[in-house]
Amino acid sequence: MTIHYKDLGLVNTKVMLQMAIEGGYAVPAYNFNNMEQLQAVIRGCVETDSPVILQISRGARKYANQTMLRYMAMGAVQMMKEMGGDIPIVVHLDHGDTYEVCVDCIQNGFSSVMIDGSHLPYEENIALTQRVVEYAHQFEVSVEGELGVLAGIEEDIAAEHSSYTQPDEVEDFTKRTDVDSLAISIGTSHGAYKFKVKPGEEPPPLHFDILEEVEKRLPGFPIVLHGASSVVPEYIEMINRYGGHMEGAVGVSEDQLRRAARSAVCKINIDSDCRLAITAAVRRVLAENPGEFDPRKYLGPGRDELTKLVRHKNEVVLGSAGHGREIMAAVRK
Ligand code: G3H
Ligand code: 13P
Ligand code: ZN
Image (tube, rainbow, N blue to C red; front, side, top):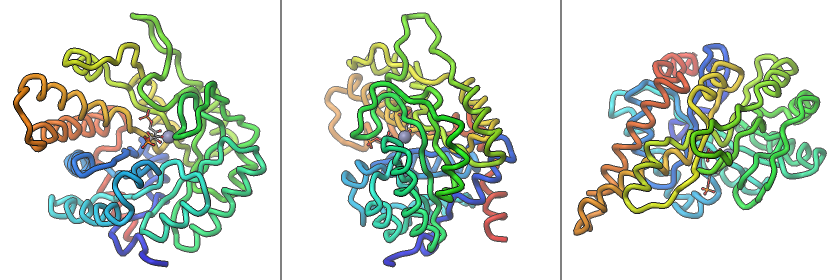
């Protein structure tokens, strides 16, 4: 064991996800790859007193460097305290695909990992997830599993068509693997092009019928929603206005997410919206100031836009605002 997450000032997801289910809200899980994204997420969450899950994908690990990420997580905890905050921060591996990558993250201070065996045959998914849980639980690290495949791109795995979670499998899967939370497929997908809709048409609703069946079989069990960006129309409009081409980009409506957050869905994953916020602001600054070449002058506004988005998500979509301190108090007990 190289470094334990508690030594970095992090927490696992156990208490926060349980409190979120009981409180009828969802904890935001924001992906980050660089300093500006991390600062914006921490700022937005401290300013709204929200718990937060900082997600790192395998791609992010490659991009930012494993050691750098560990110190960034420590920096995030320190910055949170200096801002006068007292919110729980989880560092989570998003879409871990092997036992080895999960072990490596746990040894490097992650407090939660996802083992995504959703593309494997059912019994192989169980066997892989069991192995990760057995290792992770020795160190009180939380584990998220997945049943059902999201349409779109799950990292390198292209899933042309989704296969929704089968409620008949969830009890057996969670019992046999002992996972702490379960990601399910109910019609969302990753990225900025989630649904094919004609202009003026509403995207199809999520499969709340499947979610309800899952809840019946697993009362009080933490459920995770991936692919939950709204693909904020204002950002798409701004990107297109300032030289981008993102026609047809569409996401999950805020109403659908509010409804999910009131259910057993207690962790909602958001990456694309964070990317869009920064890109929209950067494009605007560069289009309006073609001579600008100081990264602080365009990344700064990108960071400000993302901070605004995080506050909005926490306050009016996920409902996590105002719950940070109370979760920390419960964790300390
Ligand atoms: O689920 C996928 C996340 O949006 C991470 O994407 O692999 O490009 O970092 P990434
Ligand atoms: P979005 O692409 O909808 O932001 O989903 C992110 C995600 O699920 C990360 O695991
Ligand atoms: Zn995902």
